[in-house]
Each structure stands twice: as structure tokens, then as C-alpha cells.
Length: 175
Image 1 (cartoon, helix red, strand yellow):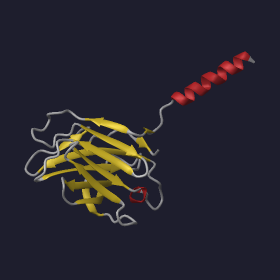
Image 2 (tube, rainbow, N blue to C red; image 1 turned 120 degrees about the horizontal axis):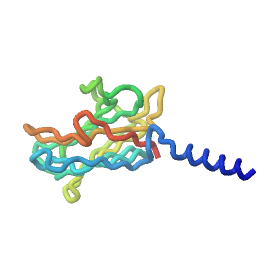
Image 3 (spheres, rainbow, N blue to C red; image 1 turned 135 degrees about the vertical axis):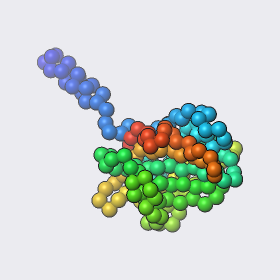
Image 4 (cartoon, one colour; image 1 turned 30 degrees about the horizontal axis):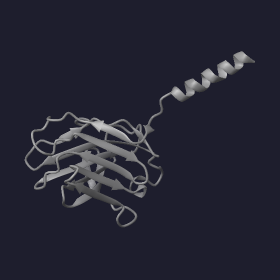
């Protein structure tokens, strides 16, 4: 009897220790500070895969000609290309698009008005994007896991990518 209990305990521990495709939210993505020589240098990006999805990019919030955004992938096992791209001028207009490979395929109208937003904080040097679940769920799937690439730039300057150029964060599970 005692051997069975020990065996069951070991089996349960092994199952709990087995990594899944995604890990629980929130997730922080670190970037090399100083890899671009201007104010939109990304320090970190945070992903909270909840209701709504929230992506916060930490950088010096420079106003004129600056922008930030995030590539979003919601389909594990579907290659390396993003499904969506949200981008906004710092303190300006923002938009959500569906992707065709690494190229913008077109604007995306979410089911309801106000389903995605951009919030810029000059006090905290952040840009935060929020997207309703309805913006991410397809006709035949629910977006339970996401991975992102944060980007920031300034007109005429190099784009900063976190965690790196065409490199994704780890998968983050919906919570």
C-alpha cells in the first residue's frame, strides 16, 4: 500500500512538472537597453493574457514622430508569422490590423465599438494596448494562448524589437 502511495505521489509530481505550451500570465519580456540610440528604446514589455489582453511597452515616451506596437500570434503550431498587429503613434491615432505573413493584410474591425485601445503615459514612459477577447477569437477557435513581439520606433530611425527581430516571447496562457 505504501509503495502505491509513493508511486502515485511521484506520478502526480511528474505530471505537474511537465511544461505546457503556455505558461500563466503575466509575462515580462526584457530587451537590451541602449540597442537603439533614441527615446523609443524598449526596456521591457509586459503581457497579461486576460479579459482583455493587455500589452504594456516600457520606453521613454517621445512625442513627435514616435510610435509603438505589438505583433500578436494566437495560433500555436501555425508557423512564425503573426496573426495581428496593433500600432499607434505616441499620443496619436492607433489601429489593429490582421496580418498576411509579416505584411499588414488590412484593418480589423472588432465586433463592438471600443474593443481595443491605446493608452500613453508620459509620467511612466509606457504605451499600453488593450484588446477585447472578441478581437482575437476566430470563427473556429478561441485565442487561449498568445505570444507577442513589442516594437517601437521613430520616423527615420531604427525600429527596436523586443525580445528581438522576428523573435517571439514565450506563450502566455489566458487567465
